[in-house]
Amino acid sequence: MDILELLKSNKGTVSSALGKDLADKVLKGDLSILESAMKYVVFDLKNTDSKGIRAGAAKIIEKVAEKKPELIANNLSKLKPALSVNEPQTRWMLMQVFGYCAKLNPKESASIINIAKQYLTENAGVCLSGAVHLYLGRIGATSDKVANTVILILDDSLKTATENEIDWILEGFYSIIDKLDSDSIKIVKKNAEIYLDSRKKSTQDRAKKILKKINAA
Image (cartoon, rainbow, N blue to C red):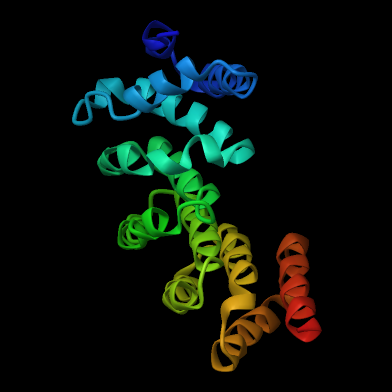
């Protein structure tokens, strides 16, 4: 099924609903939709007028990767050109995709760490930065070596984070705890303790979750 005409009308809240609906069809067995999504996520990359097409395709891929990353993991290299587009929407959904596929294809997933790091300098909103922090946690959980790279990025992010970004950075820390050495664990613990008194309960809960995991190790 070619989905270009559907994606052309892809705007606003319709975008998310359409992407989820088409992803459901993929998960039920219509892999032709996924093939089309892989093609259109890299469609007309320099044309901002085509961003709705790319973002709609990215939503399909993201939702499929969340449930069945095995359908995406071997094709991550095909998605990488779309990481250069202007619109944050496409990029944050692809960050999620690379994170969801990290365990199945750690080498390809880790190959975009520097791109993810660069995204954090853009101040393009918490949807993008949050997706990056979650990606970093998921890829960091794949090996000690990658975790030691990731912790430095997360720790640096925390120094300039907005209130709405902190939860996702803490989630990133939580994901990599099992792969860290004792010195790095101290960094995570210190950061978590700072946020035990956060005014946001969600942040307090994440800090407590981190410390519980560290103390149980």
